[in-house]
Image 1 (cartoon, rainbow, N blue to C red):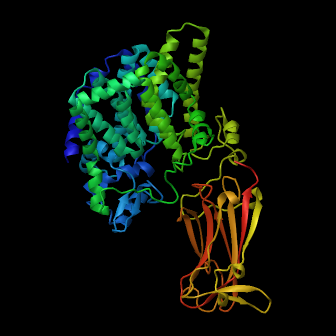
Image 2: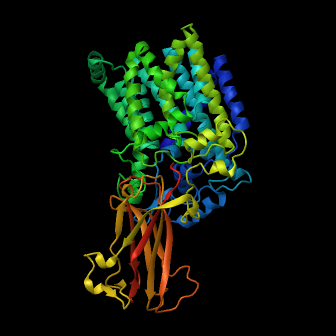
Image 3: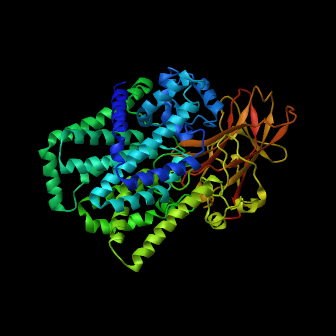
Length: 631
């Protein structure tokens, strides 16, 4: 409640003084163009969905459903299904306490709370359901994300004008808004990166102000801002590097910075206080519903940070979602570090160090393409910082009257128009949200017509987000490997468990005392380097008693450091048209490899007997099918 009051007061004060920020004719024109573009392009009716839903759930579960621990899991998901917000409830995880813990942190919910309250009042007074997900709540989310974009643009303009001039600020903001995927992320996605963009811009400006005129209030605001940034996205705790390294570029400046911090030690305490205050609500939430003040909700085998295996080249240059491929304008921001070093050496290193670490952290996330979006959405909030070297280059070009200057400006604005055109292509589903390949990209480059089936075949394989995979078309695959798991040759199996029939074939006996066959495991990189594989798994099962009361399942999954992901357990009697006892029944299951977290992760399969009476199983035959076309 305290956070809500403070934040509402700040928001009201900001809105009351908004006109003073729009005093420049240039910024009015720029914002007007942005609003017109949004009015014509924005169309998505369900903004609170998928990942945004996870960040937002704190509000309706607490203030509408009175169930922040999400005990009524099925009822809430039924409401989510009703509005088509998510096909699965991956946004929460089941905890051993019986509560369902929201995977993401509560930063967005706190920042969005005044808008949520306004939407709730509108819903209660109007005809829309006051359920947290109807049209007023969706519209409020659009407004709050637009508000933070405005914060970002306004404070970026102040920063760039302070460092360079007004013309540079105008050109840079136009390039940034229309030449990067900041534009498409707002139109089609509305993610936390938009809120982070605004907070980073505010942080930069307050860092400048504190270094010009150190005072406790600016220090406290810096702490609050870095705290919210961390609360929105914990890996962005690296935002603390900005005020910490600001002004440091050599040994002498480092000594001065240390002396400055020691002189104003009380300001440092205010900064730390601001940071701690912001994360208290999250600590309380975790303590209430997990029993611990700290809780890591991404401890799942299928996703997470792997610091020793970064995907740097893919993140930057892959046609699937490479940052420089879909936002080539940022190449100029990187080039701008050269001019920034000459013009403002005191801010060169904090921006550079942040950028390097940020690229590395983004690359360490195992789902490095960050799901569906146009371009790489994880970089959007860092544009608030990268606008500085971009502005540095723009300023340098403006003051150089050469043919090369005009050529570079021409290329910049060509990248801007390319971004707008490809955003349109993305809207028309000509550019795919996550399955792009080099071949497909080149095939649709500059195209305005719908994609035919032949061209669509150039995309990466479409994966189902629900339990069942799509049908397997063997015509586009070949058998890479054939593997036989011969139980009779596995030394760990007791000899009395192996029976050889009159035909010389062996089989394994499972019962209540021996419920698992030994697991067959093989690392993915020992099978293939392909982007995906299909596994066709065959065996036979012999039932002595009713298989429904005495079931046996074929288990298939991938294993990462002992944990299973894309786990499937298929009952061997399912799909049989007729079941007779004392007969061998063929079992065949087709399994598509998931997006592999690490190439050392192991394909795993075994039988699991869940009954009490004996069941016989034959050896397991595995065909590994690889696509004929490499991705």
